[in-house]
Length: 186
Image 1: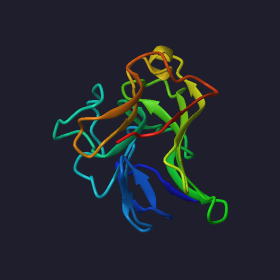
Image 2 (image 1 turned 135 degrees about the vertical axis):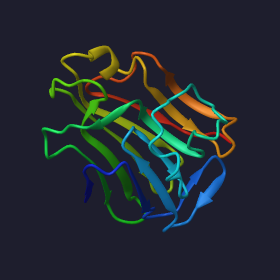
Image 3 (image 1 turned 180 degrees about the horizontal axis):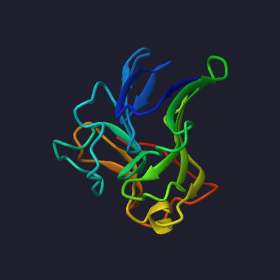
Image 4 (image 1 turned 120 degrees about the vertical axis):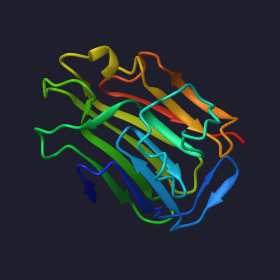
């Protein structure tokens, strides 16, 4: 289990091969994880902290591509909770491992009451193209509609930003104890 607190973007290695929109990324390939609820294949550090979420697909140069967006919105770490972090872990045994990225106790940017708790995960499964999104606690005392996803982008998109599998483009779609699965289709 690895934690990152305060870091805007982290680049980490895939623990197993993964196929995404017809491209196979080998074990050890880079994945960029940003604090704003997005992760992309390859080193996308330049765009990993982009707060300007847009509808998918997006070929804009500032949008991560190819990428996974479990809850792409303007978020930050909570300054009052030491548990606020982006965590990465690999669970299980080959050939059934899972690579889990969890945004833990995040807050909506601009919400200064310190009571936000946005905790959600993106889960990649070895041997499967399916990506699961799991929403644990999605609460905000001041911005509950935003915590439920009314301004978040949720989905995946291909390397060109021309094809996407979208769960929701800015709709009330997340929320505590919800989950979705997507299978990127080339």
